[in-house]
Length: 213
Length: 213
Image 1 (cartoon, helix red, strand yellow):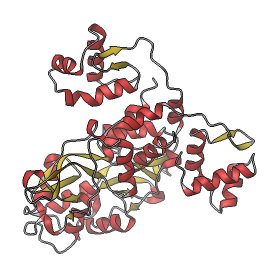
Image 2: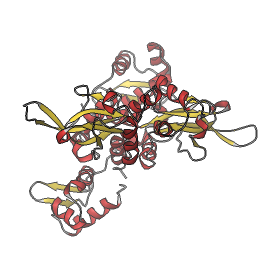
Image 3: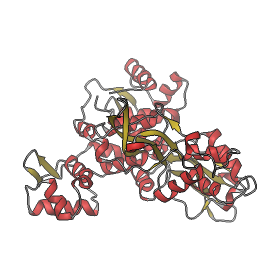
Image 4: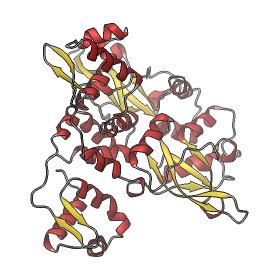
């Protein structure tokens, strides 16, 4: 199991002095009990710790494995992605905002020939532009977009779990789903074939959570 | 298990004529194989269908149960929510956008006395305002916010699964986490105590997906 730094510390503390209450663990880490609650919930759910009411937390030597999680690992971006919405780099910021509303999306891929990815633009980028002195009707999106190669991407084959990790780690709402190709100049380009968003992740989460009924 | 209408139809088809290939199921539903893939993946993962390579799909009479999913059900919003970011209704749209950037959030709760929820404002609402002829520095957020009682809310005690379902069903990015109270006039109000977003869902998904290692 992949533990965060704080979770590692908690496990270390419980290993050394169990049983120990949540309050005691919090005191040792100089944190509040409330701050620790998500970590303790996850560690207990993972079977790393055991919580006994009115006693405290224990470290579990033999941790149950979760073979069904392997199935979760097998879910691929290509099966859950959304259709891509794309624009050209010379359109105005104003038109990009309009496109976002007509397409009902929170991000747009900026593409060239053959749907080759040149940049990405998000609601956040557009809001920032709206805040400035920028003339939204005159300035093209190319001025404010995030450009290649600074774009975090995914592919049809990537496990949704890894794509979800990219979204949370990089604090972005959407990844372009791409396929690599070599252009006429022999350079590697990426054709946009979809988008994978936090909405897709939330939908998968809801579906998985409904499996038990 | 809670199946979508399309998933019910797929199960019915497979029950009546198994083994049957994905292409054949798609043809019967007048859909493409690609459209069906997420449903087939979920149904197979749920143990409702079995997929045998080069043969096709079978209906599984005895479906394995997923007791671990019960743990997922026990995760509560209160343990995973983010801190709320709130503003007063008389501040300008411009200042609301600035607050969104300084607080690094995608939505703001508009509150009155005692953090009582009056409205919500999203990046989408602000972008729409930026598009119009609105003077962002002059117009207060109260003009464009979504008002009570038209706000979808959650509470600390709600399972994260149900909150995630609200986010996807209503196509919103964020829910205010509230606690009900009775004001001095005897009316029910809701104090904002946090926010629960698609980002929180994605983080939980990543944590759960990492449990197996």
